[in-house]
Amino acid sequence: MLGGIFLFVALTASALDIAQVDHDRILQAADWALKVAPITITQYRAKWSEGGPNDFYSNGDYWWPNPTTTNGLPYIKRDGESNPDNFNHHRECIWHLRDAVAALGAAYRITGDDRYVRKAVDLLRVFFLDPATRMNPNLQYAQAVPGVSPGRGTGIIDTLHLIEIPKAVEAMETSPAFPKDVDAGLKQWFADYITWMTTSKNGLEEAAAANNHAVAFWLQVAVFSQFTGNEGQLAACRKRFKEVFVGNQMEADGSFPRELARTKPYGYSIFQLDNMATLCQVLSTPDDNLWEFTLPDGRGIHKAVAFLYPYLADKSKWPHPPDVMAWDGWPARQPNLLFAGLAFENKDYIALWLKLPADPANEEVRRNIPITQPILWVGKLK
Image (tube, rainbow, N blue to C red; front, side):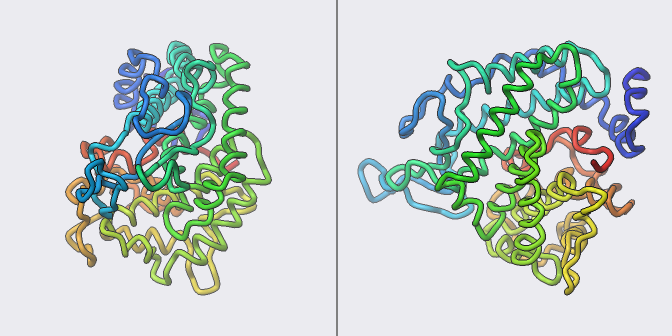
C-alpha cells in the first residue's frame, strides 16, 4: 500500500484521501476485472436492429409492446416505467467494459502494477479497435422503438458510461505496457465519435434537447474532446454550460424544472446535477472556472448543489412526489457531492459523500451514475 501512496505525492491532498478511502474497493474491483472475458457487442444480435453486427443497438426504456395489436407494434410509451424485456445486451457491454477498465485504471494509479494495464489493453482492443469485434463509433440505432423509429437522438445517452474510459486510459497511457498504437487508435475512435455526434441528424437533435439529455450529450463531448485535444469543442461545451444549462434549464432556486416534472423527479434531479457537476470538473481551468460562474441573478452550480443537498442528506424532506421506480435505491455516493465538496471546500458535502453507498445494489440507480472510480477524476485544474 505504501508504494501506491507514494504515487500521489504530486497530486492534491484530496486525491490522496480518495486513494485511501477507496483502496480496498479499487483492488477488489480490479481483481474481478482481471478475470473478465473479452467484451464485444458483436456477441449479441437484436431482432429489431436495422444495423450491422458492429452497430450498437438498444430500445427506448419506457416503450412497451402494444397490447391492442397481434405483433405488439407499434410500441407505446409508459413514462418512467422501464421495460425489462427490451434488448439491453449492448448497453450491458458498455457498462461492463466501463466497470472493468475503470477499475483497472484506478488500480494502476494506486499501485503502478502493469498487469492491470495489460488486461485493460486487451479489453480496449477488442471493444474499440479489432475490425471483427469493435463497436462502430456511432449510435445510429440507439433507443430504437419497434414500429416507430430505427434509432433516435435520445439514444446517445447510452454511451454516457464511456466517459470513464478516457479517464482510465489517461491514468495508464504513460505505462510502457500501454502500446502507442492502441493509444492512438482509441483517440481516433473517440474523435470519430465526436464527429458523428456533432454532425449527424440524431446527434444534432440530442445536442439541442431541453433537458438532461443535452447535458449528458455535452458531457460526453467534453470528456472525449479533452481526451482527443479538441479545443474547439471544449470551448463550445463551456459556452453551452453557461448560456444554456445554467441560463435556460436552471431555476432561480437551483432546481431543474424539466427534471422535476418527470415521473422520477428525485432520480432525474440527481442525475442532472451529477452531470452538471462533472462538466464543471472536466471543463474548469484556472482562467475559466465553471464552479465560480454565476449569472447576474445568482444562478450557478453552487445554487444547484445547495438546492439538492438537503434532500440527499434526508430524502424524507423531498417536497415532490416520490419516483415511480427505484425510489428506495437513491441516493448513492453521488459525484456532485464529491466534486462540489472539493471545489467549494464544503465539509458537509464530503461527509455525506463518504457516508453514502459507493456501489448501490439497485440496477436503475447504478446505471444512472456514470462514474464508478472517483480517483480517476480528481486532481489539479489543468
